Structures are given as C-alpha cells and as structure tokens.
Length: 316
Ligand code: FPP
Ligand code: MG
Image (cartoon, rainbow, N blue to C red; front, side, top):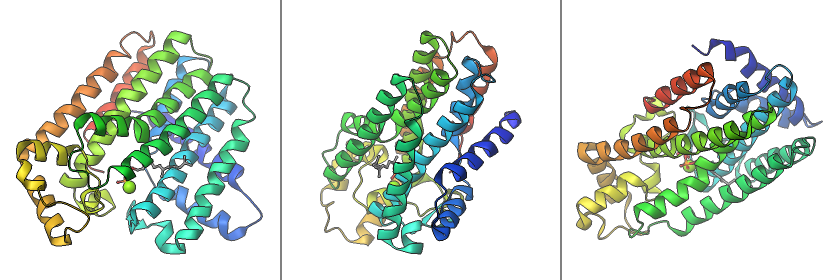
C-alpha cells in the first residue's frame, strides 16, 4: 500500500533541491545529502494523501511545492534542534552541527527557513499564510517552553501536552490541512484533516518520547535517553514521578550522568510506565480516527489509517 506515492515523494525531493539551490556548491551538496539521508517523510506523505480530498491532478504543481515547504520547515527545525540538544547523531548519521560546526548548521537552518518564506509568497490563499506563520510561531514557543521547563520536576501532564502541541502537533496539522487547502477540498474536509493531523501529531510526539526510553539506539538512529540527559521532562518521566515522587527528589542540572542513566534505566525497565505512556498516545490516535470517519472518501481514509497504524507501531 502507498507505493503510488513513491514517485510523488521523489518529485517533492527534486523540487526541494530546485528551490534551495544557490551558487554555493558546498551548501547545495550538504543540503542534498541531508534531505536524501532518509527520514520517514511522514509530513509529506500525509499532505499528499490529504491532497486527494480535492482535485489532485489540477493542483499538482502547488501540492508538490507546499509539500516541499513543509519538509523544509521540518528539516530546518531538526537542524536547529540538534544544535540546541548538542546531539551527535540523527537518522544514523553525524548531525550537521557535529559535522560542520554549530554556526554553519545554524546558518543552513536559517537559509532553509528563508527559502520557505520566498516560496510561500507565491501562494494566493491567505489561509496558508496565516496557518504557516502561526505554525512557525508556535514551533518557536514550544521550544521556548521546553527550554524554560528543563529540569523542572514539577512539570505536569498538561504542561507537557501543551508543549508537544506546539512543537509537533501543529506542524503535522499544517501539513494535512495544507494538502486539502491547496487541492481545493471542501471547508469541512479541511477542518477534518486539520484535526486529524493535530491528534496524530500529539500521538506521534508521545511515541517519540516513549522511544527515547524504550527504543534501541541502533533502530532509532540516535542515542537513547537524551531527553532526560538534557533535562527535558517528557511523559514517561512525568508518569514515573507520579508513581514514585522520591525518584526525582534530587534530579537537577547538577545530577551526574550516572544518576541520570539510573533513572533512564528504571523507566526503560518499568513496564507500567511505558504501557501508560502508550495508552495515552492511543487515546489521541482514537481522536484522530474519529475525525476522518466522515471524509466521504474511503481511499483517503484507508490510506490515513494505514499511515496511522504504521506510526503507532514504529521503532524509530
Ligand atoms: C524535535 O523534537 C524538534 C522539534 C519538533 C521542533 C524544533 C523546533 C525548533 C528548534 C524551532 C525552529 C525554529 C524556527 C525559526 C521555526 P525532539 O527534540 O523531541 O526530537 P528528537 O529526539 O528527534 O530530537
Ligand atoms: Mg531533540
């Protein structure tokens, strides 16, 4: 299933290389290598699927372009995120900041964001401009909240959920709704695809945070336990603290790596914490599903459910 999207995803990549090309050869090569180095391309795929809610063929050029824009935003935010997190690897490769230095990576991220601004200007639909600028604003606020909340062991579930809504769910909702807006789908389906993307995005980040404890670094392509090592209190850590507040009594910036690793090991080995995390992610998936019940397009629904199931069972 979904094989028919392979060529379209390829077209999106070609389009990305086209719109990011500059007369700096080194930059072109680095950008090309970075985009070709895998990634699940979840946002692109979801956008392309939702674009079948309207007239795909008639609007194909714009659909490919908006998919490029979404993938560029996602990639640029990861390049910046890896600088902030001081990450060594992503997708099984050395991060851009490690390979070329933090300053260089920062500028590449900025350059990619600048490309997005130029390309979105070509779109006439005001909703895209409103949603996109709001998405970027929320993304930044999500990161700021995360930064402010580092090592705060009093972080509650609601704080966490508000943060992941901003840093992850809203961009996925932008992707799904942009697909339907650009293909000229009905207003009802634009709303449904937005809500679907939003709830799927919430579940996506919860699984990401679960895998940061439960995954294996080989399959993940990045080191595990990094959230807690960086002081980022995610849902598994919040649940662990709810079960036993003494666990985090001495957790602070000054905790040693060994103390942090013991906590990570404890969470990784406590099934009830991991199960509860997955249960919460499952509740968001159910909400996502409810929103595509009445799309009036069984193919699109079936494909979205397929992607949803794959993401729920993913190991990276
Ligand atoms: C990965 O999450 C990071 C994000 C979802 C968002 C990062 C956003 C920024 C750095 C702000 C972008 C800047 C502008 C100008 C819009 P994670 O750290 O939980 O995942 P990971 O474990 O894969 O690193
Ligand atoms: Mg990160």
